[in-house]
Image (cartoon, rainbow, N blue to C red; front, side, top):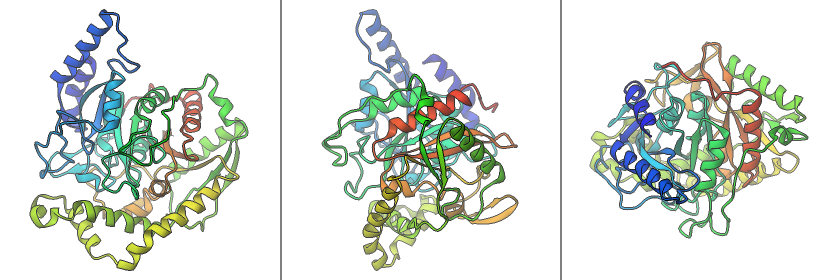
Length: 447
């Protein structure tokens, strides 16, 4: 614990991954674990492991402000279930990580805490909206980062920060605080450096809770790194989508994807290319997202617009003027999307895509600025950089971003692997095979 806190003190002034750190509480927790061990007690499978929580998730006794001036000094009196489970496993909360206000965008900054930087290049964004959690893990400021993921927020920053990012199956990790329990597409996930850490963290967090109907009846599962992860690649049927509505993919990113696919094929996987004209229902996904944001946060506009992130303000105003017929149609279109994606898994075991289409933009890039790919103006960030991830929030399938190397500029890139419902163990095995053959664990950003 002292080592992790010293690392935070040393580098977070440059990265700005944390919104809140409580060293005294963390050290008391570490001392309590030492004392339990000395008494011969079992301190739990994650005893003493430092973990952070994105500042969108409730933590007892520690401020949960959602990256917003509006909720400054909001200190919950109880943990979210997933946080409580990590604590019960012996892990120790060290702080809350930075997020865009209410997780509104795929870049991490807010009016209260400012910009989080990418530890691989401090002039670049770490992505978002779990950019703080992921940058902290990438820079060695804690091995476990709890994330949220409503449209790729666990996977986007993992790809560009060079670590693992998981969005579990809907219901795998209870998210009982969601305001729309039955139509939710927001998941609690993890950022970790190693596959073993991912398996251990997911084991601790998973399981049913009566407050989340998607989790009820799903027994807790144990995840592990296989003794021989290469076996998971023998006969694996992979469907690849290089583009999901975007026109361009960065040349280096596509070359890294090709290299990873060649590795999978050499180990016995069967690789097929998906059709370019698959209907991903992108417009209805955005409609559902805006409706959700308006229902949850619309009240902020009247009382607090002057202190909100302008991106949040614009999204809420856009949501207020959505076409009623489009909002009414969105649930049915989501159901059709689920059926189409589910059908892909009849002949295939996993879907593989780039996690994002290009290296991360400058840290001051805005959500509405177009992105440039291969020296060509590609268009809006949402559609052309991270259009690969949000679909699987709406279909519920588990998805993990796995590091796949570095661009010629030394920036990380990630491969998204999507599995069948509740097939996270397969994703862990695939990640373990990639980690064993092309290890990234000892690759550290120089800051």
